[in-house]
Image 1 (cartoon, rainbow, N blue to C red):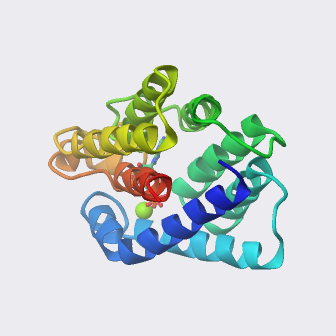
Image 2 (cartoon, rainbow, N blue to C red):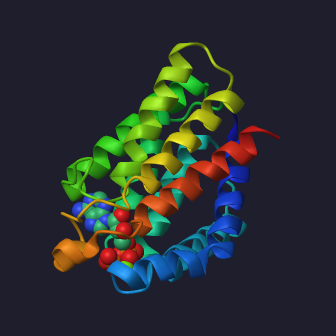
Image 3 (cartoon, helix red, strand yellow):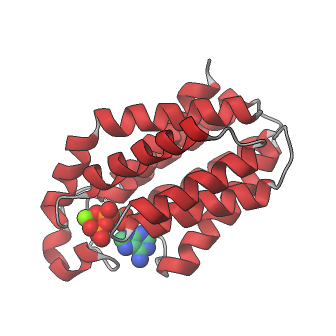
Length: 208
Ligand code: ADP
Ligand code: MG
């Protein structure tokens, strides 16, 4: 996978986030402050604007730019968390021009570790980590078995979707939703839902 592959991923994320903006906002209306869809849409629109100005030389440079833009443009909890994830993903890939599924899996693991360090959320706390962590495990397992990108990304996307769905019965222990205590039960976590979209976009681009 080269820089143009990751550019296509970012384009697909931007498209899907815009299309699902209202659903993400509704999820956040139930257990947060109804801005998650708008936050991510603003962030990825800014990413597209930044990419209209410069073409990064490598996948790593591209993903660092995505992360930095999200940190600057997306407020709330999710901006710094997703921003840190993309920056770490990019930093771990370094300046390689071509990335294998196994290298991407290792970089995504580093990205999720950075999210855990920043937000101190563990799996089961009803956050984006509940979608990210199983996706990383599925991707790592597929890559270790020598799976091709399309297959590995499909496994990761499915694990993220299952992880997001599994947040419904949980009580939030981190972020704004945790203020609701037991009333946070019965709703999907918006950040886990957006993580499933981001990995779903990777599957879409990987299948082309
Ligand atoms: P805010 O909660 O500040 O309004 P958003 O609505 O954009 O920010 O994002 C909310 C999402 O951020 C939550 O659904 C959750 O997935 C994620 N989140 C919040 N706090 C944390 C945390 N400490 N660690 C991991 N993810 C978190
Ligand atoms: Mg919110």
